[in-house]
Structure formats: C-alpha cells, structure tokens
Length: 352
Image 1 (cartoon, rainbow, N blue to C red):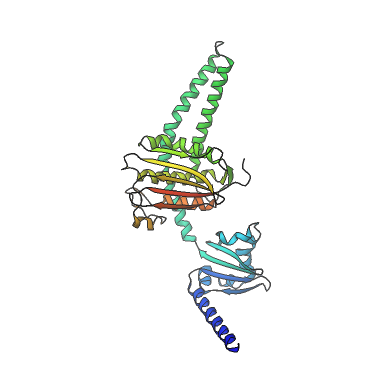
Image 2: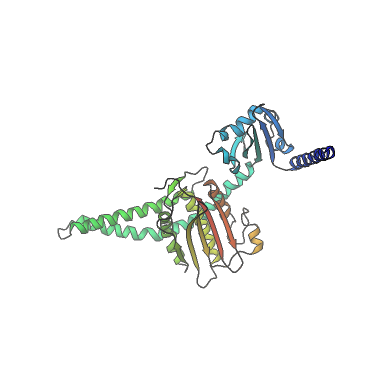
C-alpha cells in the first residue's frame, strides 16, 4: 500500500508538471481567480503577453471587474463558457470566455482580437458593397409591378364611378395596401447593408420571412434560368433572430450557389426547413459544380476565393452574422456533386 501511495503521488506530480508545461506554451491567455481568497490562483505566460498591462495583470479586483463580474450576473452564466464575450481595455479589443471551474474558482480564456475585428469590419464593408448591385437589381425588377398596380387602383378610386361596386372599391384598396407593403419590404431590405455592431433579436415567423426573401430574389435568379424550390411548412416553429442579419447571410449563400450553377444545364436551388434537436435547421442545397477539396480547406478564410471577381468575404460575414444570432453554419460539398449549406437557428420560446 505504501508503494502504491508513493507511485500515485509520483504520477500526480508528473501529470501536474505536464499540464503546467502545456499551459505555459499555449498561445491563449489563461487566468484562474479564487473568489473566496480574492486572489489570482494561476495565470500562464501568454496571459501577460496578451493583456500587456503589468498593473492590471496583478490586480485581482481589476481582473474580476473587467472579465468576470458582468458575465456572472447573466441569467445563463452556467452556459457562459460556451459563449465568446468581448471587452475593450486601453484601446484594444479582447475576446474571452469564462468558466465556472468550481464554486469559488473562475477560469478565463483570453485573446487579443483587435486586429481580427478590424479586418472583419473591412470585410463587412467590402462585402456590403459587392451585394448592393445585386439587391438593387432585385428592387429594380420588383418595384415596377406594385407601382403600376397601385397607380391603377388609385385611378379607379379617383374616378369614384357609381358603376363601381363597394366590393370592387374595397378590392382595389386592399390591393393598393398590399402593393405598398411589398414596396416597404423592398426598401427595408436596403438596411441589410448597415454595419453590424450588435443584433436585435426578435421572434420571427420563418415561413413568412422566407416567402418575402424568395419574392425579392426569385425574379433575378429566374432570369439566369435558376429554379428555386422551397419546402417550408406554414405552421413551422418561429425563430428568434435579427431579420436584417439573416437576410444578409442568406443573400451571401444564394450568391455562392448562383456562382456554382453557371455551367449546370438545369440549375436548381432547394430550401427546406425542419425542427431538429430543439433548433431550426434551414438547408439550402444546389446541384452545381461543388467545391474542390483544396478550396474547402480554406472555406472561411477572409480574402480567399477561386472566383475571378470574388473577394472571399461572403462566408466570413455569414458565419459572423449567424454567430451573433447564436446560430451556426455547416457546409457539405464535393466537386461535381453540388453544395449543401445548413444553418441552425434558435427557436423562439414564445412564438407569435
């Protein structure tokens, strides 16, 4: 028994030394705070390099206030470690996650994301400009019909002929209001191109949203011979998202699909929605050329693209927008076999 105890102690020291070596050589800043003792229990070398503030690095209260206090106050603090938070200090932006290591310990993982954030802001601006031409093309096509219909309805109402029945007049009024609503949606879509510092999450009827989105892009896609097929039940669950952000993300995905369909004889994009694992799975699939394995490795890297006129920013922006909505994206593709994009959206807790 004595030998076993000695061996266990030796193994324990060896494991402790091994973990310590690993933590000291990792490039992520790691901090452990002891709440009971109000002290810094541990921090690795990378933590000092990332923070670059010697005074703050040795202040328990300063570190707790900057990285932990506000996150602990969140209702879902138990899930805090799964969420990346951001905080600004001395003109630099830090990304960090906080874990409840034990009842009285908080573990903080820290990165300096100042440069990453700057590049993403540039990427957003460039991506928005690239998409403006597409969105205006859709508006140009779509705004003519409701304007003509509205003009006709107003002409009938102006005449006020006694021969026109009240039912017919009501029909023209309702048609005019519907056309106005359609144009309002088209104009609202322009807000898609604002920069996203934050999102405004609201409960949204997914089937209604997708119907409006498809009506905006369908004519332009049809002009290229691309058929859009949807399978979204009208009674499907509501989702909690930012409407503008989802609009932008889907526009990026559809643009990529259109590029992959240029050489296809019968080009088609299909969209289906289903609830799975307490999430809304929205899948967009095309029967295009697919993605080469070498391209697939760098799919979400900024400025990496195989398109002659591309900039490699669409998927970068899409993933960021989805992450801000607590959503994610998954892409499956093979060269010559098309591409399938799945985004998983949170379901609204109180729909309607």
